[in-house]
Image (cartoon, rainbow, N blue to C red; front, side, top):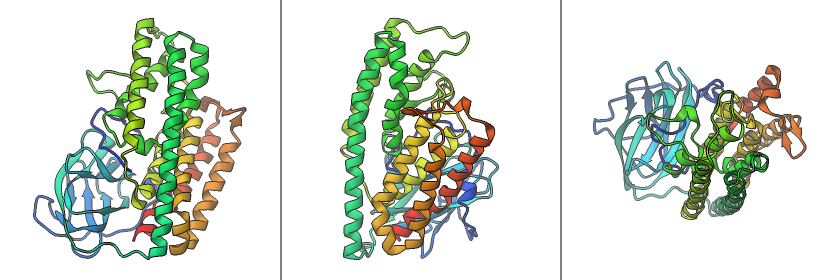
Length: 395
């Protein structure tokens, strides 16, 4: 959402549940051209066609303001689409988990400047990229003053939420790191899931710093050849060791702990400079639900600790806070959508609450296939209307 494009070493998320299927919006591709041609966007969405080998964008330029990219996956693997800043790192906007044959819209508010587009078939690697330019239109999106005030209030509230979560993350990480480095495995295991919730609640913001995300949250399955493995999941494997695992030495635990704290403090510092806008909140809320669908509800995020439901709850928390920050504005523009989203958040939360235990949750490997399926169905049900949040507020 507010992000930095994740390099090849970043997360590889298998898609067992593709929210994009539920979020499908029938679209017709017309006249897609190779994006090396100097075509200009006219009225209407900019069409994007993603295949295994191509990322065709129907225009190489567009006037500044609100842009809509209609992305269709015409390949055989799940794909993603990104609008990146000129540096190729910072993410202006993204849509993830677009299944074969499915279309999804990305709505962003883009000022004049140079950008890059990128499709990421298979959700791996750096993606298929091309240059994209936004020219000065001289027009700013027309927004009713009262509505703008509601949006501004919402973004300020969300910024305060991010600040609070990062502060708690830093505090919790230091306590966890102290216990882990000292070899107090019981205490570290007790702190692990609860502390990570602060990360998961603001994950799209945290991912906005692409160099930090792989350091802090890479899973073993995500690693590229030669990549150093640090962060939470490195510690997770040591705390919840699989059969045949060789435990880390005290020196290795100290090194992991020191780096984890340093990277988290760096993250907290950088989040103070993130500029939040309505499109970033709306897109970020959807990204958090996508995270649930592709990592948490499948049990792939926490393969040793099985604490996926803590992460699940935190992602839903973050998505709901983003939605509620925009809700007053949304109620003015699409009250029916606001009501639908509130109801579906409530339904998902009620189902998740069934698996609460004490201060936490049941472990993922304690859930039955039917329980997992019920959670996945509610995530999919919420994902479809949530994909409309950004366009409803911004356009």
